[in-house]
Length: 99
Image (tube, rainbow, N blue to C red; front, side, top):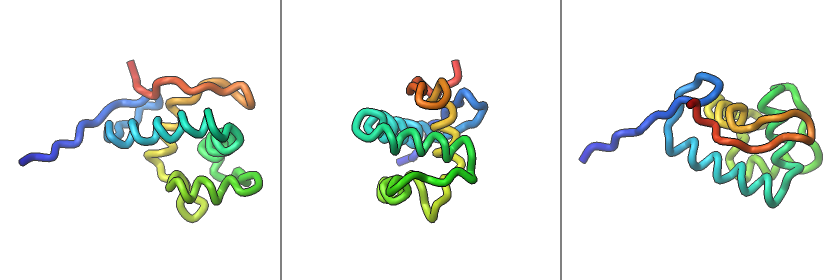
């Protein structure tokens, strides 16, 4: 049996595993709906590696495995930056896939 990992291209030009993109998008959708502050903080951390996370958002992101040891994996960053449009508190979630 062959386990072929399908890759997709993101808006930021990165190529990532489709399954990773799908899982991260599920997390992002849930965060945006259930905990928008954590979602916002994740986006800010993706945009700026030096961003200081607010309150306990770091702990929440660590539990979700979106952040590890205060760092965000490049693949997760690629998905977040490709999926989020807008700026500040006026951000929205879109498809991260390149057309």
